Amino acid sequence: MSQQSTVLRAARRVDVETGKVHSPATVVVDGTTITAVDPPQEPAGARVVDLGDLTLLPGLMDMEINLLIGGPDTPTGLPNPMHGVQDDPVYRTLRGTVNARTTLHAGFTTVRNLGLMVKSGGYLLDVDLGRAIEQGWVEGPRIVGAGHAITPTGGHLDPTMFQRLAPHIMPVSLEEGRANGVPQVRECVRYQIKYGAGVIKISASGGVMSHGTVAGAQQYSDEELEAIVDEAHRAGIRVAAHAHGDAGIRACIRAGVDCIEHGSLASDDTIEMMVEHGTFLVPTSYLSEGLDISKAAPALQKKAAEVFPRARETLRKAIAAGVKIACGTDAPAVPHGDNAKELWALVDRGMTPAQALRAAIITSAELIDVDDRGRLEAGLLADIIAVPGDPTADITTLQDVRFVMKDGRIVKHQ
Picture 1: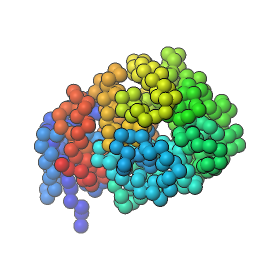
Picture 2: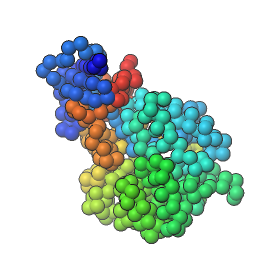
Picture 3: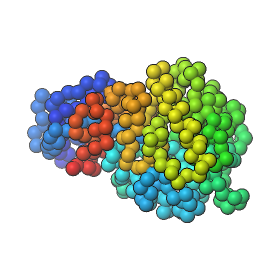
Picture 4: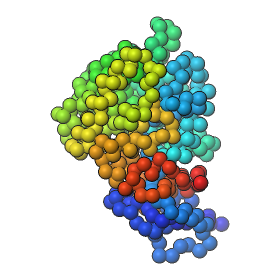
């Protein structure tokens, strides 16, 4: 017996490639796939879902998220500071199932989980969560998981640096991401890839919310960065680098890193270098407004006060220069479910709403090297959302997602 088609009707749809809004809109779905857009005739016997005065778009994408922290019992975003030593891997993964559902219901159907920076015993919890979602055990977005973020001892993504733990309180193994020197970083990359990582995440400069790291300081040597990229690229895997500082960003670009996360302190020359090399930028810019630092240590608050204003200006310059910018939130630094506020930030820093949509859909799909989603087009995956109003005129409409379909299955309809 053939599967019944589903017909979605709505007042409008957005062509994200052109930025044009078409009205009215009809999308036909068979199984997991879009089979027709605005056909002259709807298939007989199809199930019709009339969404009324809503606008259809492809599912959004978040290229910087950590589903394994935050969420339940942390409504303001930042997790309990003791989560690193209190949450075991099982509890943490169950937390991840809640955050995955929240993210999907916010309209984000694909994400990159960019690096565990917690003790897990070497288990790639994000990869396993992605497998469970793929098999239909729990609801959530498609996950490109990084496994453990790779960091030098004392680096920003060293799990012991967020709580400023004393020596020997939480030993971290190479399998859990702490690696020093060329032989170790090669082994660490190989371990993550062996167990299913779809992207490699590294700590290339200091951070804002970790103790003892200078946000602009380069952390891995040029030789270590080159070794990491070599290992990943030979396996067909891309590399994303946490990098605020200008020197670290430039070292990453020279080494062939594919994507810079944050990029807060990039100079004008470095921005041009990103354009020349085709390096992606995931600016996580809404952190400037959305990160609650009221309970952070004074030293961390001071770093945020210094870095965030410069980061906003850097993004404005990057947009004007034509850097390839994808959408990422750094949730739970921004609470899970508030992901669409990053698109507001992109517009506030100089993008048009149509450009912000491209960043969250088309450029993000390019970043993860997929061509089976990101457009409402026959033959592509049926990852579809609907919002009120016209997001090409008012980007904040994306903060009110009324309908979500993933893989041809309706997961939210209100």
